Length: 216
Image 1: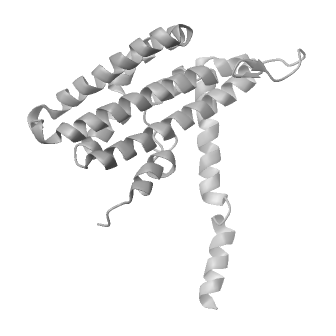
Image 2: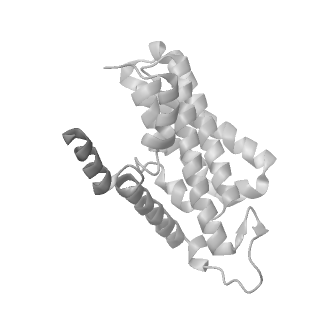
Image 3: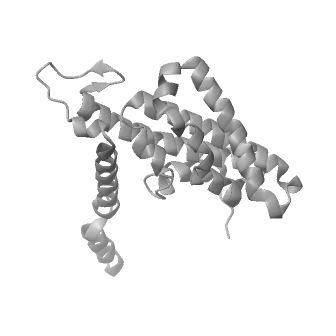
């Protein structure tokens, strides 16, 4: 099997294997805290920090972690970085920390993070593990910010707290409720599926052109 490059390791988590939009991982925070951009960005950055820190430590110490207890060790490492992220958020942005609530602690059981430790960090060198963690974390953050932006604009008529529409705008209150998370995620997944099937260079027309080129 061909060894992937660092660029491929980084871009894989952003697009081809995006944890939220492709793999459907980490949906608990993706649906629960993305009612505005600030919360989405804070959760994304906290998860990115935990993912990078745990991947770095697991990759560095993989030779010293017994296989029989590796999952427990991974969870302990992840929990350590989650505690650091939790305390930093509480000290720096207490309002956002209060809004995120228990979902910060729930980063510990985010299967996306544990999965990257088991599937990649524990089997690859430190540099590649860190690049993979960066790509996956950035991809996760992008997905959360996309969800948060749509929900905040439609549900509150603002972006990052700045009003976008006049006083006559009637906010779609459902978008900042839990149901709005499901609706927004469903719409994004539908749009992504359409783009993959019918986007530029895709779909029946593209296939017909390719076949026509082969016959010539």
